[in-house]
Length: 474
Ligand code: ADP
Ligand code: GLC
Image 1: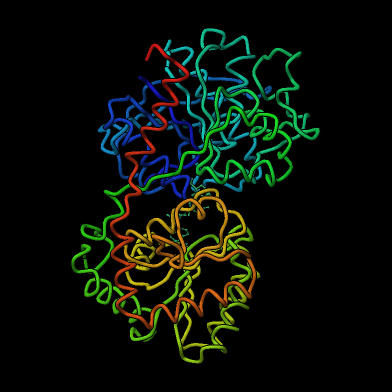
Image 2 (image 1 turned 45 degrees about the vertical axis):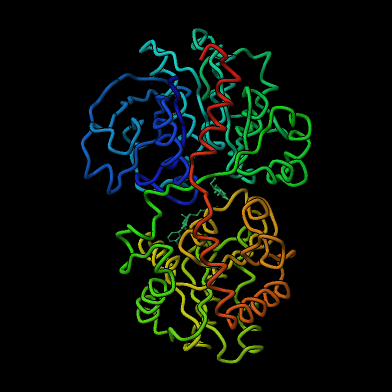
């Protein structure tokens, strides 16, 4: 079974968030299960592309409106990631450093999709499934079915996975001419709210869509930045499949990014040694409970609530715990967090930026990981935290509901709260500190969490079953 995953991100080539982790792991586990899964993504001028060797497997030119684009498809020579990796390179348009936020992002992602389709069409490939991730490849299901150029591929089953329904990639109808020749009677399939909306079009035209957790599937018809009614209408095509984690990359017993490796048996010693390394780097006392936050500093993650919630908690529990942040994002939140650090230098430290190795150390060396998310389609941070014996403190939303059970409930291990509010975060901190005071209970919960299985094995199989349901000959 030949599958193409289309994505803007893929670890370790280019990562902004969890999308990269999923696309860097799922195909590997699908291949172990006997599929032939490959990843196709835009070319980025980054460490991975500079340090690895590629073959040019295809070269051609195509049109983006009236602009002729020369493109090549590069394949990583060794398949060392556990899957074939193909990069679409278009000099001057898709050969830059960053993944997002260029003013011509619309042109970049349309060109990426056209180049992919031209490549598989001209090179006479017949994938069994095309699996699109988020809006960046959302026009592919429409183009396959309604552009004359790709008639040969019109019956190829398409799957869309929605990692984040807040972003749609919308653009104005004045850019319709960027698309290759299409059946103009079908343009309604591109439209949502008077604009060309790639995510909405993908939901309408894909054969099936999945969300990265079952709860998020339900939430999309209540809140999805204007697509609620569409999700209500198309709900029968949807399925929630919880993400897994790459247990080769995220293994506290082998992780090269942490100074002290540990298994479940040495959890107490192992975590303490990593905590000491982490605290010494950030001038914090390793004898106090350490609550950390890792992530994009944006409203979706509830990051704006952190400064006020932590100030209130520091006052409520003077000298009672430490707080560490790793993240970057909205400038106001960054500034407020740095002010918090200046006010409470002995209890708080903040690292503004992106640092993969530091994230691993924080998962390994913290006691608690705070996630006050307003929206969390799945969330991988809590899964990494649990694998590293760190108790998640999460708001009850999306995938956090599906993966964390409050320790007060039967079989529970984490801390959950209902509202993305300062009050609820403070209450969660109080509960965390009283739990921490009970060493035996905490150790029991940490061991319980480390033994949980969030590997890709089960979820990769769910995707395979889904593919088979679309193509019974497979
Ligand atoms: P999202 O994709 O919405 O950002 P996820 O929880 O799915 O959230 O995944 C976030 C991923 O990005 C995790 O692998 C997390 O460790 C990583 N991450 C987020 N911010 C940073 C950062 N500042 N430095 C290092 N890793 C980060
Ligand atoms: C998105 C979501 C996050 C999810 C990730 C991977 O970035 O915000 O919750 O874990 O995709 O699916």
